[in-house]
Length: 172
Image (tube, rainbow, N blue to C red; front, top):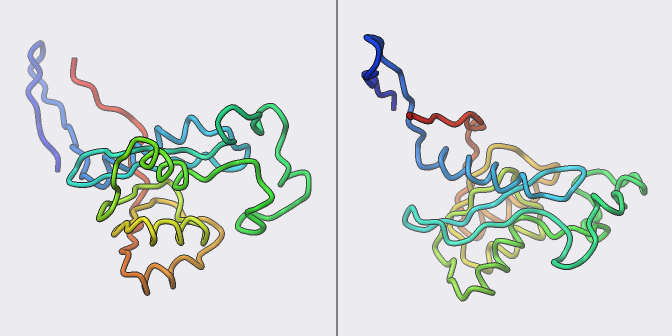
């Protein structure tokens, strides 16, 4: 939706494009991804129900342990391609961290939507099914697309949208 706003100090007008809800929450997931400690992919996730943020997560080493920024990437050292051998990695995926945070805080995520910068690996997809997530929105595809069959069987809607603008509009 584009809105034309009059400017107070000039006789010009400013075009302002308000993001859709999907763009808004995905843009937040992109911001959350900036906390990632992974050297390969910065992934962020935001779990939402009724347009309210329930929890967030990003990919990185378990709390209190050394991460790839300090130790280097074991997967790179072993030449493991993206989407394979998930167990050979220090990081917990963004979706997993968002689910864990919900559990730690006593927040139910049943019947919610997850906004994630990348589509899920099969391990995260299984967790999302059991967490009773109903919708997954992303703007980028991960190398592993085996989640699609599982999501279809479990009734989880998968939506891929264009990556939202990374600029922030501020009216001072």
